[in-house]
Image (cartoon, rainbow, N blue to C red; front, side, top):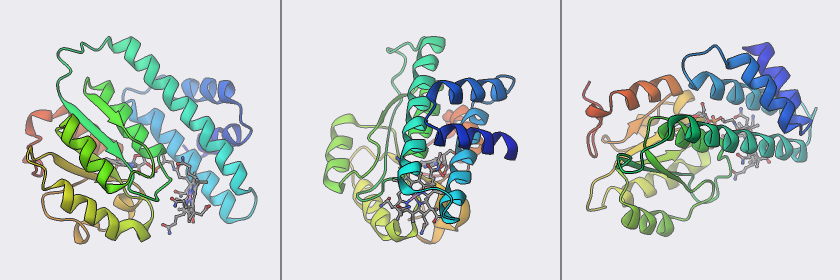
Length: 223
Ligand code: B12
């Protein structure tokens, strides 16, 4: 995975969308879980993070790589939609995803939204930097079963708690799910109310979606 991630990282930094797409497909086409495709992207972006820490690249380079990633995710989403031929009528399970106000790291939440779509859910990904009042009013209108928030910078944890508190007041009791870099590296249970579902990685997420019968409103998975 390390070599693939570094190679993909370099392609992302070079801004070559087509080459990055080809390489990624080549390396993940044999995998059964579509999370493998996304995990290589995640590792490649983490490699880019290390390059930035070591001053080997600039913030502008990081932006280039992020933009290429966004293109890859949109293309993957487009292909998935064609392959799975979603039946919109049966796609009644709805989920919405976003990052809290100020949080710019939105590649992860787009990946999560893509994965839900692959399993036939109807999703809305509102991306980065969504103010609280807009998150609440959109949710009131859209009435998703699941609301997913991405947590990447520790500084935003108190804000994430505020969002959860407000979203838990919604009268249709959506399940609130939190994931992201912080969920994988910290014990987020201490920062979130007990009913919030904390997801550490994509395998856990895919397992959960497959067992959708056990996703309960406003509650943790019961197995
Ligand atoms: C790319 C990047 C940026 C881009 C973001 C572009 C974009 N549109 O996303 C830009 C250049 C804008 C940026 C800005 C900043 N960044 Co930055 N950035 C990164 C970098 C290199 C990669 C992040 C990324 O895209 N990862 C790839 C995705 C796919 O991974 P992911 O987000 O973890 O998501 C995966 C899982 O976590 C999960 N997931 C994610 N969300 C959710 C949600 C749910 C519900 C679920 C179930 C799962 C889930 O699914 C994904 C697939 O596995 C990281 C390095 C790193 N190690 O993370 C730093 C990093 C996150 N950034 C950091 C910092 C400090 C900043 C800045 C403050 C300074 C700067 N570098 O300019 C600003 C702050 C902006 C802000 N206010 O948010 C720090 C954060 C440290 C901390 N204190 O927490 C990091 C760790 C770099 C570092 N080593 O210091 N950054």
